[in-house]
Length: 466
Image (cartoon, rainbow, N blue to C red; front, side, top):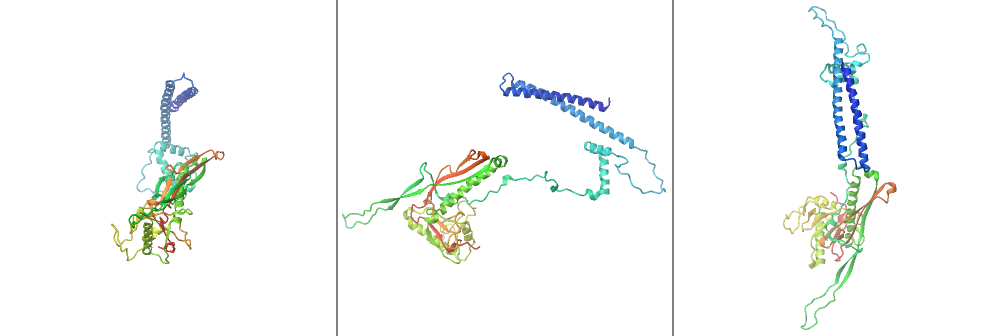
């Protein structure tokens, strides 16, 4: 019996085994469907038994496939040897020393004459993949060298990635998404924090606006000083900061991180809007309640600006007296802080502070935007940089302001859970949309004391030149 007959028998066994495996698969499918429908007569062991039978058939299938592959390699090898036997010729005798040599063209490895249908070439290609060290590989390599000689200019051509528009797949680095920058809430973070009351839309504070009195008694037994104490109610209104975004279900379900990126942006917009309202709100925002210290200068310098900071500090102490000024902060735009650091000169304050050389006009803490305190001025006032400060103020709409504030008198009420997140699928269900809403309630008060905060403003704070 030859190799082809043995291979045919192995293929018959393989066909039989495949049929057995399919029968076991059908049986397993039927048993699992019965269990799913509530049939209690079929146990887990029954299912495992059929699965084990199928696994045994799989082992037999792998063995027969390996046997067939061995036959294929052996049959191919026999065919290759037979082809070599056909080409074998007796070795030519060595030419005599004085014989004339002749120059001619060597026959190609594969040619229309020796391989008219290309069958030998195709067989050698297949066998070279199976046996990389055989004669088939040598003939294929010799053929490639011949092609380099005959058609080298054509073989030198190469295809770039542009030739594979459907195979060179672009890679999207979703973990490196660049969020839109936000001003955040540097000023809000230094405010005195309070929990927003559970009910109501206003917060009210008693302000003692008429104080009692005391004076030296003169003469004895005369009436002592008396002034009736009186208060004025300060009422601040709660407000809501909110934002929303509707995303398609396709964007959420087929995108990568789309919902998370959107929510991150909404939360950051929320905090930036809250901070901007505290600074710039009409009537009660810091810019509108702070007492102004004018700084008018056509050629401003940091050395000329610094006395205005001391003026603001002096004004605060005159207002607060025994209530104290607590932690003082100078809140300014990043462009103003950078400009102050850019200033150099030969003069310095007359009065130094502990821990600072007299030649220094302050210290920069080398922290980034939003990292709380950025530095300290020579009088001990800490610097906060906040880009929610307006830069379009003044007659030329190009000024910013510096706020000198007492953090103990910056009151901010917020919900502990703010901002709240709502994910609503029903409102836009008909259009396959998902509504994302972020909101929070807050209230603030910077008005417990009249002129309890200061601001430096004027032409000396126009767009700085570096």
